[in-house]
Image (cartoon, rainbow, N blue to C red; front, side, top):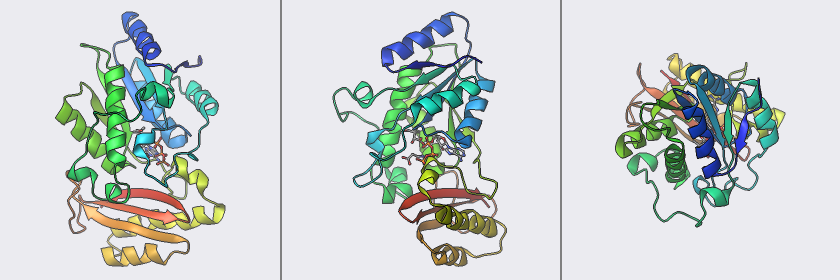
Length: 280
Ligand SMILES: Nc1ncnc2c1ncn2[C@@H]1O[C@H](COP(=O)(O)OP(=O)(O)OP(=O)(O)O)[C@@H](O)[C@H]1O
Ligand SMILES: CC(C)(CO)[C@@H](O)C(=O)[O-]
Ligand code: BAL
């Protein structure tokens, strides 16, 4: 399989997409990422490759979605390794712009806002996070839209359940001509949801982080009440619970645990914030 073409400018990417479409590509799949790719990303990349003529992965650590004191500066950046991994999956194009290319005038004056659904759960602890994520993805959709008659699909992981719901909502609300395809959570053999931020965990912390998946599994199996589940996470050494709730997956409204509801958890393991979720 050939190396993907790496585009660092909007104009270069548009040109590369236009050429492939003119050359007969009949569909375009996009996987937006912040890089530091792991097996979870690669499974999505494989699916993007399998379901589309032209497979594009974006790698951009988006400053707009990080709050003050978060890990924007220290977020892992390893583009060369990411491109090598994507080559193995047969990805055609990698879009890796720098911050000035995406935001030439600095913070955009016009941006996407996520409203009430973006202010709860992750948005309560990370104010502005979803506005930033939606804004950059909206730009990616605009930049990459392949034109009429060419189906455009974008892939998002169910690990980031609130983000996935908001992306679907944005596409409806703003009439982006793209279909959102959700991808199930990819886990380590022990059950930890794969995440770029797992790199920050020491081996001991990675062990403590397993409490998230174990607790979600016990809750889903009806072995724990919500309150017992919260206590179990909070009792794990080096773990600080942010929230553990059950919601209606259609709108994230809080509901009692019941079949068909979604349990969402967020916790700090040492200084690292992790999220996970499971259908009950
Ligand atoms: N374990 C996973 N299973 C399924 N999808 C995933 C997984 N990890 C990441 N993704 C998805 O990959 C896309 C890109 O995510 P991102 O680059 O932020 O990686 P991440 O591992 O979620 O990083 P972070 O540690 O910053 O949360 C998102 O749609 C995200 O939901
Ligand atoms: C969708 C995304 C790439 C936007 O920066 C990011 O929020 C992520 O990696 O989930
Ligand atoms: N995976 C979601 C991106 C973020 O935490 O900023």
